[in-house]
Figure 1 (cartoon, one colour):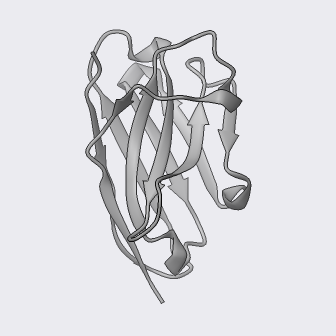
Figure 2: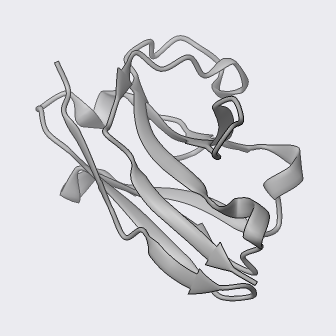
Length: 124
């Protein structure tokens, strides 16, 4: 079992930046692929980015490449999502997730565990 706690959300103006963090509990954190999803009001939840358990492979939604970067620090049991050049359409609840299947290609990321989410609001 893994518990995920997100932080770093908030209100930011368009063009600004935020860095989300996700702290994970459990000794097996470093063996899990991790990722982020988001859900905007009235919309379906969508994939944002994922990172392999080693940190050697990442996968980011095409529409977010160049603005969003995922990273991890296994020594701190934490992953990050650096978000730059934020737009009002990035407003959403952002969820940290974990996929315990080590054999899965990062492009087929399929999380089992979900955090409670953190709100990101981008004003125009």
